[in-house]
Amino acid sequence: LSAVLLSPRHEGNESLATQLQDLERTATSGTLDAAERAAAWVEFGLLCEEQVGKRDRALTAYKSALQLVPDHSEALSLAIDAAILLG
Image (cartoon, rainbow, N blue to C red; front, side):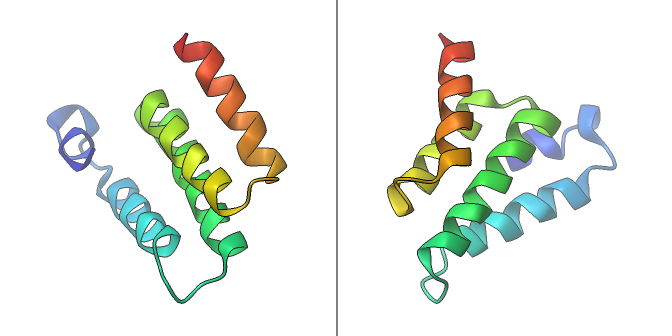
């Protein structure tokens, strides 16, 4: 994913790459509660989907959020939408 963000087509998006790295770090942190980590995965997924065009990576992030908080309504809705669009 970082290679895509730092390619010539995505020049100037280093801040996006940094945002994604920070969100992934937050989402995998052992010191935060499940809700905070799930929220980070949702935000990570939204950025992947909307800014990078990586719907498959977004779906993985939404699934990660749902593993942490199975009744996370936003993650569930986004995962369903992404899965439908991916076919």
